Image (cartoon, rainbow, N blue to C red):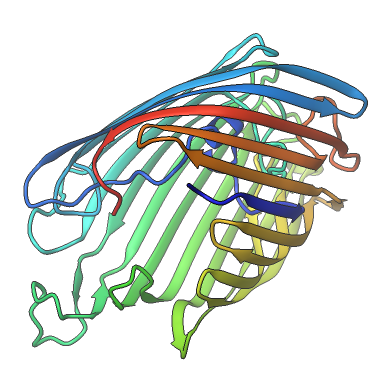
Length: 406
C-alpha cells in the first residue's frame, strides 16, 4: 500500500518531456532495463480505466478515460536494452480523438562484460497528446504531435584507482568517461501550418561516482555543455533561437552525517531572432543558473534557477524553491517568465496536484489523481490570462510484467 501524495505547485516543474503529458500520467513509472549475465526478455503491459471530472471556470464536465500500453525489451548486462519498443493508446469520452505514442530504441554496442558504457539510438512519436493541466509553458496548447530522434553515448565506468579490479564488488569509486546526447524533434498541431524544429546537443565531459551501496551514490559532473537551436517552418515572422548553456559543475549526494547535499552552478547565453533583411531583429540573452539542495532521509529542500527553449523559440526562465518528502509530499513555489524579441511575458500559474494509490494485489491497484489550479493549457487561454481549472480521476490499473528495476 502506498501513502497518499500531495503536491502544491506555484508555477510548475521544468521541461517539456513525455512525463508532462496527461497520457503519460495515467501509467505509473518505475520500469527500466534489467541487468543479467545473459540475454533476457522483459515486458510490461498496463491497462487503466478511469472516471473523470473536470472544471474550466464555471463549466463542469464528466466522462471516462482509458489507456493501454505495452513495453518490450531484450536486456543484457548493461544500462540499456539491446532492442526495446513500446506503445500507448489513450482516449477520453469528452474528446473525439485517440492519443497514440510509440517508442523504440536500439543499443548495438551494449557491453556483455563488466563495463557499463553504451551507444543508444532512440525514436519516439506522439500523436494528439495533450499537456498536463499544470505543465510549464514550453509546449503548444491543445492536441499536438511530435516526432523525436535521439542518440546517446555513455562512456564506460572504470575504477578511480588504476590498481583496482572493476569486477571487485568492494570497488566504490569510479570515473565515467563522459556522456553525450544529441536530439532532434519536430512538433506540429492539426490546426496550425507551422512546425517547430528543436535541436540540442548535451555533453558531460567527466563524472565521478562513489557508490555507498544504498542506491544513493555521490556523483560529480565536471564541465557540462548544452547547445539548443530552435526554429519555426512557414513562420511569417521567421523566428529562430540559438543558445549555449554550461555547468561548471554539478554534485549530488555529498554526505555530511545524516545529510546529503547537492549544488549546480552554470548559465546560458545566446540570442533570439526574427525577420529577414531590413526586418531582421535580434536580442541577446544571458541567464545565470544554479541550484542548491539538502536531503535528510526522504525529505528534500531545493532551490533552482534554470532556463530552456520553448516550442515557439522564446526562452523560459524558471525560478523554484521546493520542499518534498519522497513519495508523499511536494511543495513548490516558483516564478516563470518567457523572453522574446523586445517582449517579456509573465504568468502566475500553479495549483495542487494530489495522488493516492492502493495496491490490491501484485497486478491490480486503485488510484486517485487530482490537479487544481491556474492553467495555461485550456483552449483559448493566453499566456497573460491563465484560468482556474481542475481535473480529478479515479483509476483502476492492471499490470503484468517481467523484469526488475535497475
